[in-house]
Image 1 (tube, rainbow, N blue to C red):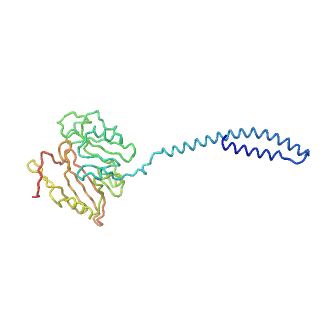
Image 2: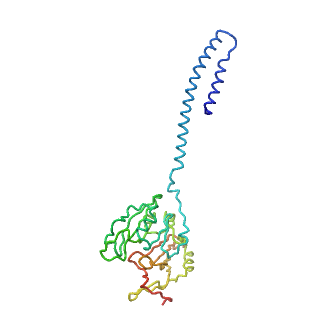
Image 3: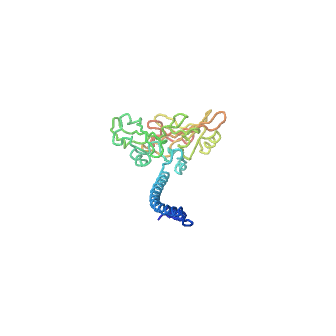
Length: 320
């Protein structure tokens, strides 16, 4: 018997004993005894019914509490509770790697991966259903132009990304499957109130919470950017490259200081699937009056843009 039934039963026994107690054999006392006996019979039946009802209500209450506790435990994390930090992978990535972290996922831009490899690598985190892997690229996307599709995170609705892909080295009118195309760029589709710019970090909008650059580089104040450029050994206002008679001459990574920004140009550290080195650019913006950081842009050269072919550029040791 449950504790509630035992407690109720003891209470009923005490109550019955009190009701049956009387002094003398007066007519009123006899009536009291008779009434007490009848009440005892009625109370015992009512008590049993009450206890059964109590059991039923208690069971329902416990079941409800258990259900509420289970719902509380399994309730999904709200978007506001999802916080991201720079991963070890992006912290260790070279500034000229082409890597970028969006949310908690690191991507590499600049045509280092095919669409098929991309889906295999990230398909467990993002809905790739919009990418028509069994179809063929439109002829406009064979060569210098790319197609673009959106993918969405399964866990965080803020992470809606645009994926650009194409096939740079295919012949004109070639029929190329989407799965065989290469990933040209990946960027956060929306970056907040500062306006849209692929893969920019703005200090006063949500992009600063969702996007991370190699080395965990963030928007910097004037003096900090100046120090970074010096530490990297970049040439100030130096010549980065030039074309001459079909040959591209590379003079070394360089930076340029403007009135409200620093512009950095770098050659990628490794050749991509097309056997060329993409161009990597950073632009650090600061407030001209306070010299405080505002935002930072980061881009990797796209298909058909400037790049350094492995067998088609010359490294110049000293700037002329």
